Image 1 (cartoon, helix red, strand yellow):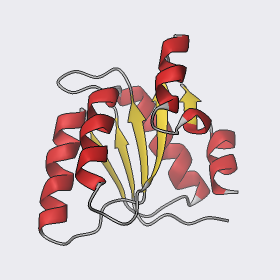
Image 2 (cartoon, one colour; image 1 turned 180 degrees about the horizontal axis):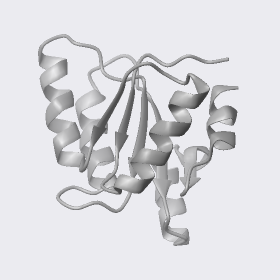
Image 3 (cartoon, rainbow, N blue to C red; image 1 turned 180 degrees about the vertical axis):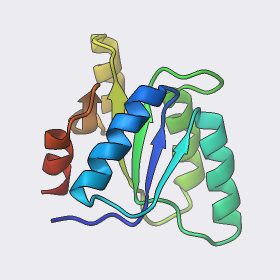
Image 4 (cartoon, rainbow, N blue to C red; image 1 turned 135 degrees about the vertical axis):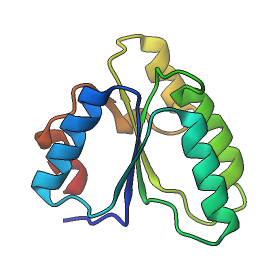
Amino acid sequence: MKKFDGTCIIDDDAIAIFGLKGAMQALGFVEDIIVFENGLDALEDFEEKMQNGAKLPSLLFIDLNMPVLDGWGFLEEFYKLRQREESMPTIYIMTSSIDQKDMERAKTYNLEHNYLEKPIYAEVLERILA
């Protein structure tokens, strides 16, 4: 069973966050879960951590549709930031979108296999841990 060194949820949907955190905690998924309501807040926090030499979460769950900076905008900026780093965290896209264009766009980040439809149930998390 995989263990992740910190998890980050980037989503503005309080109900989705509550459900995902509850499922993670029930499975003993990870100790440390941080949450941001938009991509900009997450980016600013990650930049600060990188400047201070702190570790970033090793697992990210990113919603696509958020205010301020959406999931696509976050991914674009995050990939630029991480170009100078050796390792990338494991990233999962979460969405309630059924738009095929989103799935195609996920391929540009090699995330087509990490594309999760909301709501995220414990069974999905168990597959991630396997």
